[in-house]
Amino acid sequence: MVQNNTRTIAIILLSICAALTSACNGGNIGAAAWSQFHADSQNQGFIGVNSSPAVAPLWKRKVGPVAHSSPVIAADGTVHLGTTDGKLVIVNPDGTIKCTVDLSTGVILSTPAIASNGNIYIVSIREVDSDSYLSTLHSVTSGCESRWSYTFPDVNEVIRGYTSASPKVMESNQGTHIFLPVRLSRQRDSADNDDYEDGLNELFVFDDSGSVIDRRTIGGCVHVSGGGSDISGLLSDIWDIISDFPNGTAVIGDAFGPLYEQFGWLDPTPALVDLSTITQPERPLIIVADNCIGLRMTGFQWRLDLAAPQLNRIWTYDDDSNKRYYSSPAVFNNGLLVIGREDGMILGFDPETGAKLWSQNVGEAVMATPASFGRQIFLNSLHRLHVLEANGEFADVPVVSTYLGGGQTIASPAVSANFVYYGTTTGLRTRSFDFFTRANDSDATGGVSSPAISPEGIVYNVIIEDGSGYLMAYPARAQPQVP
Image 1 (cartoon, rainbow, N blue to C red):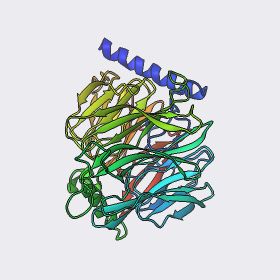
Image 2 (spheres, helix red, strand yellow):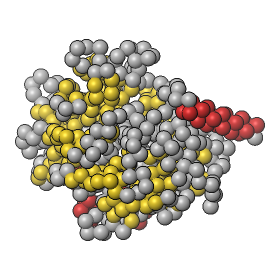
Image 3 (spheres, one colour):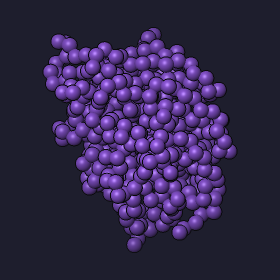
Image 4 (cartoon, rainbow, N blue to C red):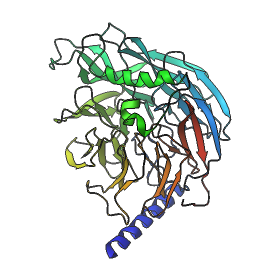
């Protein structure tokens, strides 16, 4: 009992510290705005503001067919997300639609990214032939006008660049740069020593005008008979659910099998880490995971100290498990890199060296990207929310460290200064860090798109209802309710 009380006090103190640090705008404890996938460039899934249990929404707005794309929030409070009929939807803070931008180049599965000047970056993907896909990166202004687009290489039936990862944005005195990993963007040649790879996957870096600044190999895929790659069958699963949306027949629920079989498993999104104030001036760290043939995770320095910025590979980690599906990597402010795996293994690394520090088995598939405020790590497996300490051990929270809340989820958790939010097929759930406060909006059936939190503490979440997607907003200062 004494140990539990001590843990509770520690959690409360950490919550107060997070809130005060955010209020003072110091310490870089979390995202200043939830403007990219999983909050910020590092994929921390945390913003240091106080919020309230998500029980009764302020408003609910139909936005069209949404699968994995998660809401992100611009500086003016507008909320952005992509639809599977190829549209960028921007919603005003009051729930009215500001605009819908038809990109007309396929579907949108991933999450947009927003720069500080309001420019938006979003990826579409289209099926060219059976099990063969091609992606385009788009830039759109905050005024809903197209700026530019870049279609990835389309060389032959094997070499067609595509991705379901989300773009990431980093801003510096060298300008705005966009990072995106792409599959099968380059043909393997005699200079490449991995002879089991037919097509190579690359990390692309763009400047704000849409020009490719750098591209480096991060892995490869094997061509399979009938077209496509060894991973493209996964996209076929996603295409099946997408085809149901226009007919209003898309459904979500436990009776249809695991969510990752219904909706597919997306490509990992990179993590961008600014270490310039710690060890390497003007050399941010870029972590990218490639999972076409097992996990190959690479750490690059982004050499901003050069006249022409470029990527410099500093480490590579090859996983020997032969597992192919992973979450996105997340790098937390305590200096820890964490990634989840399809067999339930959670892996912790040193982000500067790529050295594996620990592993933990949570017992079932982890597609969702972990979240943390710097000490405890919150992560979703298919049916459970888990809490780990920074050393990989299960946290000794007063109730349980692993909480079975009902339903399924492949969505990533969102963490404020005082609550954890995660969507499931049976509702949007709220948990305090000590697990004593629990709330659930059972009408918010989702579990695919991840929640987002505004700097004011408003929680946004996408649900699937009647074959379409709806964006819901929950107030920052609601009275706590425990059902």
